[in-house]
Image 1 (tube, rainbow, N blue to C red):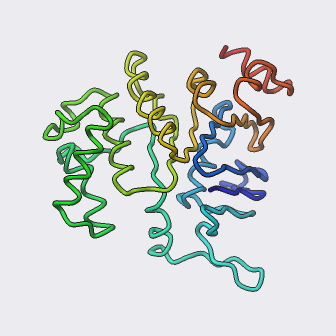
Image 2: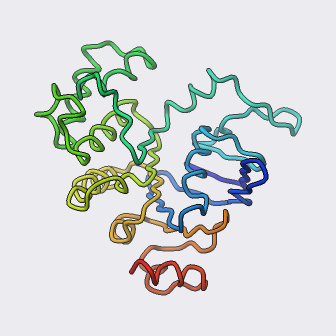
Image 3: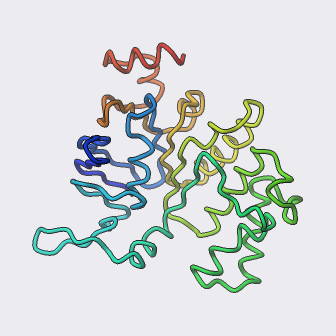
Length: 250
């Protein structure tokens, strides 16, 4: 579903990604771990072209992301074409980014109606199904300010799913939550994984990574340092940088 080929990203003189290559199979869950500043979130944002890459290529479902290629040269897509690609990729951020002046239901139906031109009745029916799926059917008419952080994040997940994405990206979705609210969000994500959604998750939740991920990738300094099955990598990290990082967490 995702192929990254020597992806590089600079912010001025700062090299954030230094040739990241990895693949994510359809229906699999890949968790990215690593210290702050290692490039995890930037890589996630490159997958849906929220950040332009400086070198390398990214493909989602066989399609080059953000660019067209002609004669061996890359040409950036028109913003409208990039947005069309992006609508097939759901993204859930650390902070929920819900519209505060809209109800939960209105937050979930907005993008399908405006972007995919789904009829309102159909969008509402689907939104109610998704809210039920994330355990918030009774909160459809509430406003974000009336919800806990965990509930807001579950609404954000339902909103992303309303676009029927082929791929879901999660950028530390529990890091802004109180500890007692983390479990309810991870529970929704586990259900998604069980249903076969392809997911890339930046996380510090090692228990989730061990239980749910098909592959665990440790990044540091803008490169993939080590990757492998989660239980194996967490129990027996080979690289000293991985060992040092995990020793502080586990």
